[in-house]
Image (cartoon, rainbow, N blue to C red):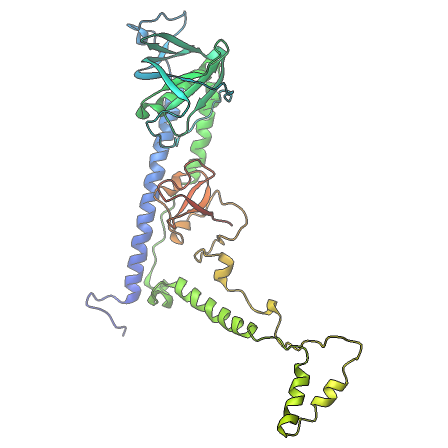
Length: 385
Protein backbone atom coordinates (compact mmCIF):
# COMPACT_ATOMS: atom_id res chain seq x y z
CA UNK A 1 0.00 0.00 0.00
CA UNK A 2 1.32 3.45 -0.94
CA UNK A 3 2.31 5.79 1.86
CA UNK A 4 -0.02 8.81 2.10
CA UNK A 5 0.01 12.06 4.05
CA UNK A 6 -2.61 13.31 6.48
CA UNK A 7 -4.93 14.32 3.62
CA UNK A 8 -5.00 10.76 2.28
CA UNK A 9 -3.32 11.62 -1.05
CA UNK A 10 -0.04 10.40 -2.43
CA UNK A 11 2.52 12.59 -4.19
CA UNK A 12 1.09 11.52 -7.55
CA UNK A 13 -2.34 12.86 -6.63
CA UNK A 14 -0.81 16.11 -5.39
CA UNK A 15 1.19 16.44 -8.61
CA UNK A 16 -1.92 15.90 -10.75
CA UNK A 17 -3.88 18.45 -8.71
CA UNK A 18 -1.17 21.13 -9.04
CA UNK A 19 -0.72 20.55 -12.76
CA UNK A 20 -4.45 20.67 -13.48
CA UNK A 21 -4.85 23.86 -11.45
CA UNK A 22 -1.99 25.55 -13.31
CA UNK A 23 -3.26 24.46 -16.74
CA UNK A 24 -6.76 25.70 -15.93
CA UNK A 25 -5.43 29.11 -14.81
CA UNK A 26 -3.49 29.53 -18.04
CA UNK A 27 -6.51 28.44 -20.09
CA UNK A 28 -8.90 30.81 -18.31
CA UNK A 29 -6.57 33.79 -18.84
CA UNK A 30 -6.10 32.94 -22.53
CA UNK A 31 -9.81 32.34 -23.07
CA UNK A 32 -10.73 35.64 -21.42
CA UNK A 33 -8.26 37.55 -23.61
CA UNK A 34 -9.57 35.74 -26.69
CA UNK A 35 -13.17 36.67 -25.85
CA UNK A 36 -12.27 40.33 -25.29
CA UNK A 37 -10.65 40.60 -28.71
CA UNK A 38 -13.51 38.69 -30.34
CA UNK A 39 -16.05 41.11 -28.87
CA UNK A 40 -14.01 44.09 -30.08
CA UNK A 41 -13.71 42.72 -33.62
CA UNK A 42 -17.44 42.05 -33.79
CA UNK A 43 -18.19 45.53 -32.48
CA UNK A 44 -15.99 47.09 -35.15
CA UNK A 45 -17.62 45.04 -37.89
CA UNK A 46 -21.11 46.02 -36.73
CA UNK A 47 -20.04 49.66 -36.69
CA UNK A 48 -18.52 49.38 -40.17
CA UNK A 49 -21.80 48.02 -41.59
CA UNK A 50 -24.12 50.43 -39.78
CA UNK A 51 -21.94 53.55 -39.98
CA UNK A 52 -24.28 56.30 -41.20
CA UNK A 53 -24.39 60.01 -40.58
CA UNK A 54 -27.23 62.42 -40.13
CA UNK A 55 -28.01 65.97 -41.13
CA UNK A 56 -29.63 66.48 -37.74
CA UNK A 57 -26.32 65.77 -36.05
CA UNK A 58 -25.02 68.98 -37.61
CA UNK A 59 -27.82 71.11 -36.22
CA UNK A 60 -26.47 73.87 -34.02
CA UNK A 61 -22.92 73.64 -35.39
CA UNK A 62 -21.36 76.96 -36.47
CA UNK A 63 -20.80 75.65 -40.02
CA UNK A 64 -22.84 75.05 -43.12
CA UNK A 65 -23.05 71.58 -44.60
CA UNK A 66 -22.74 71.07 -48.35
CA UNK A 67 -25.61 69.43 -50.25
CA UNK A 68 -25.61 65.71 -49.41
CA UNK A 69 -23.13 66.16 -46.53
CA UNK A 70 -23.94 64.43 -43.24
CA UNK A 71 -22.20 64.45 -39.86
CA UNK A 72 -20.71 61.20 -38.53
CA UNK A 73 -18.93 62.23 -35.30
CA UNK A 74 -18.07 65.25 -33.16
CA UNK A 75 -15.60 65.86 -30.32
CA UNK A 76 -15.35 69.17 -28.42
CA UNK A 77 -11.88 68.66 -26.87
CA UNK A 78 -9.66 68.66 -29.98
CA UNK A 79 -6.50 70.68 -30.59
CA UNK A 80 -5.08 71.85 -33.90
CA UNK A 81 -1.40 70.96 -34.35
CA UNK A 82 1.06 71.96 -37.05
CA UNK A 83 4.41 70.50 -38.01
CA UNK A 84 7.44 72.59 -38.83
CA UNK A 85 9.02 70.06 -41.17
CA UNK A 86 7.71 69.25 -44.66
CA UNK A 87 8.15 65.46 -44.72
CA UNK A 88 5.88 63.52 -47.07
CA UNK A 89 3.33 61.40 -45.21
CA UNK A 90 2.21 57.97 -46.46
CA UNK A 91 -0.94 57.79 -48.55
CA UNK A 92 -4.19 57.06 -46.67
CA UNK A 93 -4.86 53.34 -46.28
CA UNK A 94 -7.98 51.36 -45.46
CA UNK A 95 -6.35 49.33 -42.70
CA UNK A 96 -7.98 48.39 -39.41
CA UNK A 97 -5.97 48.12 -36.18
CA UNK A 98 -8.14 46.24 -33.63
CA UNK A 99 -5.26 46.23 -31.10
CA UNK A 100 -4.05 49.84 -30.92
CA UNK A 101 -0.87 50.39 -28.89
CA UNK A 102 -1.07 52.24 -25.57
CA UNK A 103 -0.74 55.98 -26.04
CA UNK A 104 0.73 58.61 -23.75
CA UNK A 105 -0.92 62.04 -23.49
CA UNK A 106 2.05 63.92 -24.88
CA UNK A 107 2.86 66.15 -27.84
CA UNK A 108 5.64 64.80 -30.09
CA UNK A 109 8.74 66.82 -30.71
CA UNK A 110 8.43 69.24 -33.62
CA UNK A 111 4.65 69.54 -33.29
CA UNK A 112 3.10 72.75 -31.94
CA UNK A 113 -0.47 73.46 -30.88
CA UNK A 114 -1.95 76.48 -32.67
CA UNK A 115 -5.67 76.29 -31.85
CA UNK A 116 -8.37 74.28 -30.06
CA UNK A 117 -12.06 73.66 -30.58
CA UNK A 118 -14.69 71.24 -31.88
CA UNK A 119 -13.72 68.44 -34.28
CA UNK A 120 -16.41 67.40 -36.77
CA UNK A 121 -16.21 64.32 -39.00
CA UNK A 122 -18.50 64.23 -42.04
CA UNK A 123 -18.74 62.09 -45.16
CA UNK A 124 -16.86 64.78 -47.12
CA UNK A 125 -14.24 66.24 -44.79
CA UNK A 126 -12.72 66.56 -41.34
CA UNK A 127 -13.26 70.00 -39.79
CA UNK A 128 -11.90 71.77 -36.70
CA UNK A 129 -14.02 74.69 -35.51
CA UNK A 130 -11.45 76.54 -33.41
CA UNK A 131 -11.28 79.86 -31.66
CA UNK A 132 -9.13 81.36 -34.44
CA UNK A 133 -11.14 80.07 -37.35
CA UNK A 134 -11.99 76.89 -39.20
CA UNK A 135 -9.60 74.28 -40.61
CA UNK A 136 -10.86 71.79 -43.24
CA UNK A 137 -9.29 68.57 -44.54
CA UNK A 138 -11.30 67.38 -47.54
CA UNK A 139 -10.99 63.67 -48.35
CA UNK A 140 -10.80 64.37 -52.07
CA UNK A 141 -7.67 66.50 -51.57
CA UNK A 142 -6.04 64.33 -48.95
CA UNK A 143 -2.56 63.09 -50.05
CA UNK A 144 -1.05 61.87 -46.77
CA UNK A 145 -2.27 60.50 -43.45
CA UNK A 146 -0.26 59.35 -40.44
CA UNK A 147 -1.35 58.18 -36.98
CA UNK A 148 1.39 58.55 -34.35
CA UNK A 149 1.91 55.09 -32.72
CA UNK A 150 2.93 56.56 -29.35
CA UNK A 151 0.97 59.80 -29.06
CA UNK A 152 -2.69 60.79 -29.70
CA UNK A 153 -1.78 62.79 -32.81
CA UNK A 154 -3.06 62.36 -36.37
CA UNK A 155 -1.30 64.33 -39.13
CA UNK A 156 -2.85 65.06 -42.53
CA UNK A 157 -1.53 66.49 -45.79
CA UNK A 158 -3.79 68.01 -48.44
CA UNK A 159 -3.15 69.43 -51.89
CA UNK A 160 -4.17 73.02 -51.15
CA UNK A 161 -1.98 73.48 -48.05
CA UNK A 162 1.80 73.45 -47.80
CA UNK A 163 2.23 72.88 -44.08
CA UNK A 164 1.28 69.56 -42.51
CA UNK A 165 -1.37 69.83 -39.80
CA UNK A 166 -3.68 67.59 -37.84
CA UNK A 167 -5.43 66.93 -34.54
CA UNK A 168 -4.29 66.20 -30.99
CA UNK A 169 -7.09 64.34 -29.15
CA UNK A 170 -7.67 62.94 -25.67
CA UNK A 171 -6.21 59.43 -25.44
CA UNK A 172 -9.59 57.86 -24.64
CA UNK A 173 -11.10 59.07 -27.93
CA UNK A 174 -8.21 58.26 -30.27
CA UNK A 175 -9.11 54.66 -31.19
CA UNK A 176 -12.73 55.54 -31.97
CA UNK A 177 -11.70 58.59 -34.01
CA UNK A 178 -9.12 56.76 -36.09
CA UNK A 179 -11.49 53.92 -36.96
CA UNK A 180 -14.34 56.30 -37.87
CA UNK A 181 -11.96 58.43 -39.94
CA UNK A 182 -11.01 55.28 -41.88
CA UNK A 183 -14.69 54.46 -42.41
CA UNK A 184 -15.48 58.03 -43.51
CA UNK A 185 -12.58 58.07 -45.98
CA UNK A 186 -13.57 54.61 -47.30
CA UNK A 187 -17.17 55.77 -47.68
CA UNK A 188 -16.01 58.84 -49.61
CA UNK A 189 -14.08 56.71 -52.14
CA UNK A 190 -16.81 54.00 -52.16
CA UNK A 191 -14.58 51.34 -50.59
CA UNK A 192 -16.39 50.60 -47.34
CA UNK A 193 -16.86 46.97 -48.43
CA UNK A 194 -13.06 46.57 -48.35
CA UNK A 195 -13.00 47.54 -44.66
CA UNK A 196 -15.80 45.07 -43.87
CA UNK A 197 -13.95 42.33 -45.77
CA UNK A 198 -10.78 43.01 -43.78
CA UNK A 199 -12.71 42.70 -40.52
CA UNK A 200 -14.23 39.42 -41.71
CA UNK A 201 -10.72 38.11 -42.40
CA UNK A 202 -9.55 39.19 -38.94
CA UNK A 203 -12.53 37.43 -37.36
CA UNK A 204 -11.77 34.24 -39.27
CA UNK A 205 -8.12 34.28 -38.21
CA UNK A 206 -9.09 35.00 -34.62
CA UNK A 207 -11.61 32.12 -34.55
CA UNK A 208 -8.83 29.69 -35.51
CA UNK A 209 -6.76 30.87 -32.52
CA UNK A 210 -9.35 30.08 -29.86
CA UNK A 211 -7.56 28.28 -27.00
CA UNK A 212 -8.54 24.69 -26.34
CA UNK A 213 -9.44 23.49 -22.88
CA UNK A 214 -6.53 21.36 -21.59
CA UNK A 215 -7.00 17.67 -20.95
CA UNK A 216 -7.19 16.55 -17.33
CA UNK A 217 -4.00 14.90 -16.09
CA UNK A 218 -4.27 11.76 -13.97
CA UNK A 219 -2.00 10.59 -11.15
CA UNK A 220 -0.80 7.75 -13.37
CA UNK A 221 0.89 10.33 -15.66
CA UNK A 222 3.17 11.59 -12.89
CA UNK A 223 6.87 10.90 -13.49
CA UNK A 224 9.53 10.25 -10.93
CA UNK A 225 11.27 13.45 -11.99
CA UNK A 226 8.43 15.35 -10.25
CA UNK A 227 10.00 14.38 -6.92
CA UNK A 228 13.21 16.23 -7.81
CA UNK A 229 13.22 20.01 -7.10
CA UNK A 230 13.00 21.67 -10.49
CA UNK A 231 11.49 18.59 -12.16
CA UNK A 232 12.65 17.57 -15.61
CA UNK A 233 14.86 20.62 -16.00
CA UNK A 234 17.01 19.54 -13.07
CA UNK A 235 17.24 15.99 -14.46
CA UNK A 236 18.15 17.31 -17.92
CA UNK A 237 20.87 19.57 -16.51
CA UNK A 238 22.27 16.71 -14.44
CA UNK A 239 22.35 14.42 -17.49
CA UNK A 240 24.07 17.13 -19.53
CA UNK A 241 26.74 17.63 -16.86
CA UNK A 242 27.27 13.88 -16.64
CA UNK A 243 28.12 13.87 -20.34
CA UNK A 244 30.02 17.14 -20.60
CA UNK A 245 32.31 16.91 -17.55
CA UNK A 246 33.95 13.54 -18.46
CA UNK A 247 34.42 14.75 -22.03
CA UNK A 248 36.11 17.95 -20.83
CA UNK A 249 38.40 16.01 -18.50
CA UNK A 250 39.33 13.63 -21.29
CA UNK A 251 40.07 16.48 -23.69
CA UNK A 252 42.20 18.23 -21.07
CA UNK A 253 44.91 15.49 -21.35
CA UNK A 254 47.88 17.36 -22.96
CA UNK A 255 49.14 16.02 -26.29
CA UNK A 256 52.45 14.20 -26.48
CA UNK A 257 55.24 16.63 -27.33
CA UNK A 258 57.91 16.01 -29.90
CA UNK A 259 60.87 14.13 -28.46
CA UNK A 260 59.02 12.85 -25.43
CA UNK A 261 59.64 9.25 -26.51
CA UNK A 262 63.36 9.98 -26.67
CA UNK A 263 63.35 11.57 -23.21
CA UNK A 264 61.46 8.62 -21.79
CA UNK A 265 64.07 6.26 -23.29
CA UNK A 266 66.95 8.24 -21.76
CA UNK A 267 65.53 8.37 -18.25
CA UNK A 268 65.99 4.66 -17.37
CA UNK A 269 69.62 4.76 -18.53
CA UNK A 270 70.42 7.67 -16.22
CA UNK A 271 69.05 5.87 -13.21
CA UNK A 272 70.72 2.59 -13.98
CA UNK A 273 67.44 0.81 -14.69
CA UNK A 274 67.42 -1.27 -17.85
CA UNK A 275 65.27 0.34 -20.53
CA UNK A 276 62.34 -1.56 -22.02
CA UNK A 277 63.43 -3.42 -25.17
CA UNK A 278 60.57 -1.99 -27.28
CA UNK A 279 61.65 1.67 -26.96
CA UNK A 280 64.79 1.62 -29.08
CA UNK A 281 63.28 -0.20 -32.10
CA UNK A 282 60.31 2.18 -31.99
CA UNK A 283 62.63 5.18 -32.36
CA UNK A 284 64.80 3.56 -35.03
CA UNK A 285 61.95 2.68 -37.40
CA UNK A 286 60.82 6.31 -37.80
CA UNK A 287 61.49 7.72 -41.26
CA UNK A 288 64.47 10.05 -41.29
CA UNK A 289 62.78 12.30 -43.85
CA UNK A 290 60.16 13.54 -41.38
CA UNK A 291 61.52 16.63 -39.52
CA UNK A 292 58.83 16.52 -36.78
CA UNK A 293 57.70 13.29 -35.14
CA UNK A 294 54.00 12.52 -35.24
CA UNK A 295 51.94 13.22 -32.14
CA UNK A 296 50.52 10.20 -30.40
CA UNK A 297 47.20 11.45 -29.10
CA UNK A 298 44.86 8.52 -28.54
CA UNK A 299 41.79 10.73 -28.04
CA UNK A 300 38.53 9.87 -29.78
CA UNK A 301 36.98 12.11 -32.42
CA UNK A 302 34.98 15.09 -31.18
CA UNK A 303 32.00 13.91 -33.14
CA UNK A 304 31.85 10.82 -30.97
CA UNK A 305 30.81 12.88 -27.92
CA UNK A 306 26.99 13.18 -27.97
CA UNK A 307 25.52 16.64 -27.47
CA UNK A 308 22.90 16.83 -24.71
CA UNK A 309 19.32 17.77 -25.49
CA UNK A 310 19.58 20.94 -23.40
CA UNK A 311 22.37 22.23 -25.68
CA UNK A 312 20.23 21.73 -28.80
CA UNK A 313 17.35 23.69 -27.26
CA UNK A 314 19.69 26.58 -26.33
CA UNK A 315 18.00 27.06 -22.96
CA UNK A 316 14.41 26.39 -24.00
CA UNK A 317 12.37 24.03 -21.78
CA UNK A 318 11.70 20.51 -22.98
CA UNK A 319 8.58 20.42 -25.16
CA UNK A 320 7.00 18.05 -27.68
CA UNK A 321 6.75 20.71 -30.40
CA UNK A 322 10.48 21.14 -31.11
CA UNK A 323 10.49 24.83 -30.11
CA UNK A 324 13.91 26.20 -29.10
CA UNK A 325 16.02 29.35 -28.93
CA UNK A 326 18.68 28.13 -31.39
CA UNK A 327 17.30 29.13 -34.78
CA UNK A 328 15.02 28.03 -37.56
CA UNK A 329 11.61 29.33 -38.64
CA UNK A 330 9.51 31.91 -36.84
CA UNK A 331 6.37 30.58 -35.17
CA UNK A 332 3.27 32.60 -36.06
CA UNK A 333 0.71 29.91 -35.17
CA UNK A 334 1.99 28.10 -32.05
CA UNK A 335 0.61 24.76 -30.95
CA UNK A 336 -2.51 24.82 -28.76
CA UNK A 337 -0.68 23.36 -25.76
CA UNK A 338 2.37 25.63 -25.87
CA UNK A 339 1.42 27.28 -22.56
CA UNK A 340 1.63 23.87 -20.84
CA UNK A 341 5.39 23.83 -21.48
CA UNK A 342 6.30 27.54 -21.59
CA UNK A 343 5.27 30.38 -19.27
CA UNK A 344 2.87 32.49 -21.36
CA UNK A 345 2.07 36.16 -20.78
CA UNK A 346 -1.52 37.13 -19.90
CA UNK A 347 -3.59 37.56 -23.05
CA UNK A 348 -1.17 35.34 -24.99
CA UNK A 349 -3.69 34.20 -27.64
CA UNK A 350 -4.97 37.70 -28.39
CA UNK A 351 -1.70 38.83 -30.03
CA UNK A 352 -0.90 38.44 -33.74
CA UNK A 353 2.90 38.45 -34.10
CA UNK A 354 5.42 35.62 -33.98
CA UNK A 355 6.58 33.80 -30.83
CA UNK A 356 9.22 35.59 -28.72
CA UNK A 357 10.60 35.36 -25.20
CA UNK A 358 10.53 38.49 -23.03
CA UNK A 359 13.22 39.51 -20.57
CA UNK A 360 11.16 38.30 -17.62
CA UNK A 361 11.17 34.74 -19.07
CA UNK A 362 7.58 34.66 -20.34
CA UNK A 363 6.76 34.04 -24.00
CA UNK A 364 4.51 36.31 -26.06
CA UNK A 365 3.02 36.48 -29.58
CA UNK A 366 4.07 40.11 -30.14
CA UNK A 367 7.13 39.51 -32.35
CA UNK A 368 7.34 42.08 -35.14
CA UNK A 369 4.96 44.51 -33.41
CA UNK A 370 5.72 47.96 -32.06
CA UNK A 371 4.82 47.00 -28.50
CA UNK A 372 6.74 43.72 -28.40
CA UNK A 373 6.90 42.39 -24.81
CA UNK A 374 5.33 45.57 -23.46
CA UNK A 375 5.05 45.31 -19.70
CA UNK A 376 7.49 42.38 -19.57
CA UNK A 377 10.85 44.23 -19.57
CA UNK A 378 11.23 44.15 -23.37
CA UNK A 379 12.31 41.59 -25.96
CA UNK A 380 14.94 38.98 -25.10
CA UNK A 381 15.00 36.55 -28.04
CA UNK A 382 12.88 34.75 -30.66
CA UNK A 383 11.40 31.29 -30.20
CA UNK A 384 12.16 29.11 -33.25
CA UNK A 385 10.69 25.98 -34.73
